[in-house]
Figure (cartoon, rainbow, N blue to C red):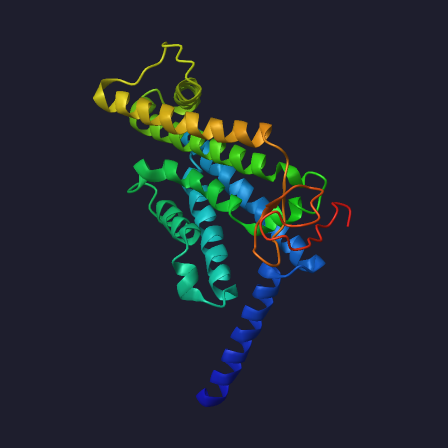
Length: 265
């Protein structure tokens, strides 16, 4: 009996894996709807991560936290099943980050001081090719670099805000402490430096220095994306050069004839 059930179980598992591959990597209407739904759920989870410092004192916080942990566990398991090369997937930074985030969700009291790193899931979300593939099919495809730079800045701002709140403003607690942390972060990153909020001690000064250096670099990257000539992302079939002028006929690197689709195609 076991010998009969085993092939059936393997066949069922393969059907599930095949279906998940179609949903995660396919381009059918059903697959696109599934990928959009997954992205929406990701955004809701990220919103919860951002609001965590304010929600931590709510009586239902742990229930929400563990519910999110279940969702993240199911999503990671589905990605592993959909993968054709699990060892390679395991080495990807995005999956390692998600596993760490899952650990902070399962042990929120033990890993409380690392909870601010959950916001990095926003960066992980930005690494999904599905989002940018959909953007490239619209008239706004030339804004891809700007959108990527903006996501990097937002991720940095919220990660730093979480860090500053955790280690410097937690005593203030709740929304007021989080707003103070966000205010300090934005004032420091933009080098406005009003001076009404400062971080105490040597650790506070070092934190401010790092925030200013990294923050101004990200703002420069965003500014470059806004002012430099618009280009589209289209891999040259010959040399794989990614960035081209919207009206390019030939690749500027190898001269291969390009067939860049119009946004409406």
